[in-house]
Length: 396
Image (cartoon, rainbow, N blue to C red; front, side, top):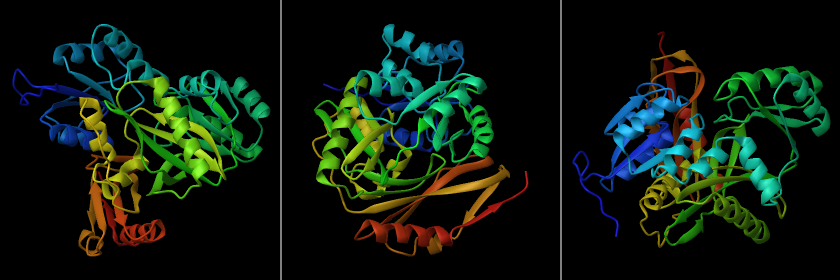
């Protein structure tokens, strides 16, 4: 029997989020619906999840000693990693000492690093993947490019939202790709993966939840990315029955190997009936924000239930929907949005503004959600709404 006491009392059930971005913010609110006390942690102040959590800490999450210090002080019932740049070896140690890491410390360790998850998928589980090579320095990188061939994709082994990722289409792209990967890694310069370019019809995210009653896959989500950073997503992505069956099998195989409870975002490439595994995140996925308008339980609500060990007998699907990321480019701590009255005047449109404190370069500041009779109309509606949004960036 699950028991939950009131927040901020001696009997409170506590969850600690390691990473406090927009996805974490939604998780905080869903956990709080069940009376869970939530502590948000991130490397910068005023992160979105911090704005709704009961309290927060600002630390370098790659600092294992500092991470251990606040976890031992707070003694959370659940430790929920939400970003890649965390001292994962410390989480492994803490789990051995009795702390509960979501979904498991080993799953976090493997998936926060592209090398760990790729070797698990391709070499241990035998799942279909793109050809790949790893490189620690420029000499190894050039050799990897030569062996994999052009075109290819270059990524830091640890990054998120497309940071550090690029596509090498000609020899002129090799130098910029190396520099981009070294500058964009979550933990700084270092090891990269070079992947063979996959000829695919479309990409999907298969949201997969492991919960007390088993494993459930959601309707596939299609998405469009720019250098690995999501711009639009839609649900459902039309697929053949064979492709859906293969995608579900891959999703259940990889999440079964990782174990634990919670939602996973399993990314795959699809060509006809063939499905190729790409990556997996052991937490809500940015492309899955579309579920906030297509389902009665969003990916965040599903994640909260699974974490708490609560049953998930049904996920009701309302109908087709789309999401469009609001990406801001510039250098300021004063971003002002307007035009919301026009955006929300059309039925079936919603908007979420994340409340991020500043932008340096480009950053996702919000998302527009739309629903209609089919995916194409939903995407068009989201695009119309986006065109009405006005963004003002004032000087620092």
